[in-house]
Amino acid sequence: MRARRLTGSLACLVVLTLTAAGCGLSGGSDEGEASAGGCKVDKGNVGSGKLTGEVKGKITFQTTNLKKDFGGFFDGVIESFEKANPGTEVKWIDDPGDNTFTSRTVADAQACTLADVINVNSDTATALTKAGYLLDVATKDPGASKPFVPAFWKSSTFKDASGKSVHTALPWYTGGIVLTYNKDLLEKAGVDPQKPPTTMFGLFADYEKIAKAADGKYFATMANPVWRIPADWDQMNIRTLSADGRSAAFADDPRTVEWVEWMAKLYKEGAMPKDSLSSGNDPSTLYSQGKVAYGSTNPSFVRFVKQNSPSVYDKTGVGQQPFDALGHTTGAPQYISVAATSKNAPTALAFAQFLTNAENQTAWCKDPNVVIFPTTTESLDDPFFQKADGDDPFSEARKLVAEQLKTATAYQTNLSPAVQNAIVSQVQLAMQGDKSAEQAVKDAQKKANELLKQGS
Image (cartoon, rainbow, N blue to C red):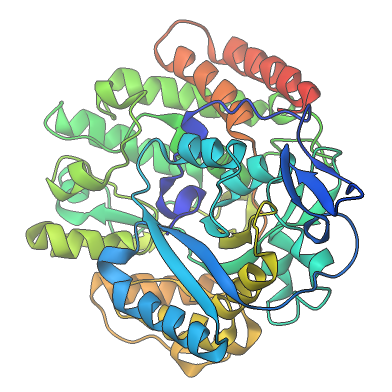
């Protein structure tokens, strides 16, 4: 249940060594075989031409940390699919989504054991698409786009090893980006919870006020810039990559250096826990303990707080994440992909489309324990998503996201984990005082370009 900012992607914490060499897609042999990502597959899984074959047999379906809270729902979806398609069997695997998620997913792909149908975020989809491990659903089913809002369908485009844009995912659900904060801690620092800042630097200024008022007793936010790159830059309308995605461009914008300077100053002044600079932990635990003023930007984060810390939930406020120069928010959809290495691709694709159809999206997104929205046009027309009532934090989050979707675009910069890690590492050095912000940005762009040139 993640996207980069939706739940704080961990994909960027590891460097993938997937390159075009030995990967990608190739034509078939006389024996009816082809290759995808170095794995032998059926010829129908790759290349041009619609996917054909019977919908029957066994497949595996992998989600990320959903079974505990939504086991009943997905068991019902699987049962309905199997009933509608006699002779099929879906085995559900629920990955814990810990900090080894991406490395394990990549290892599965390289071992040719990737789940047939898998829930991925944009980071993982970017890496797996480049290496040739995901089915091009638009090619294999020319009508695949019909149910989806055009902006969300467009967001499911990723580049293969040659740089060609391909649709290797179905948009599943999306969330907005909100500020979640402890009203008591903000008021102690002289920050008005009723007037959220409209710019990223305005938010940073509030972080600074909290650092000065807290004097180390609590913090404003977490330090690791992995949670903010490139999300903050997208919102500030800083172009992280060139239009063709083949080179880095963020160092060309002077605001990037200013952003890094702010991060370094905030870290030095104590706005962030010192031990969180390289930690993969998001704010969830510390926020629930009342030790961090701002929580996750994931709207469903408020469910976590409500369940784990009712006293902090009562103090929680929800506000609009700064629109900044972009002027609106960006969607960060979760996706469902089909493995190009699937031995039963027709069944896998059929289940992926069944899972993401309007009926099932509407049913799940209406669950009272989540603040997520569907990506199909039919679902979004449902009155449930057009009207939101209540004044508790959960209802406030739902109302904000509903309003955001009226103007949101599904645009977000897709960086490979290797490139993102290279940028983050340089920013961390600046935050530690090991180099200037200007030098860190310059070095980050140089390293990013070296990796992009290598196809990483």
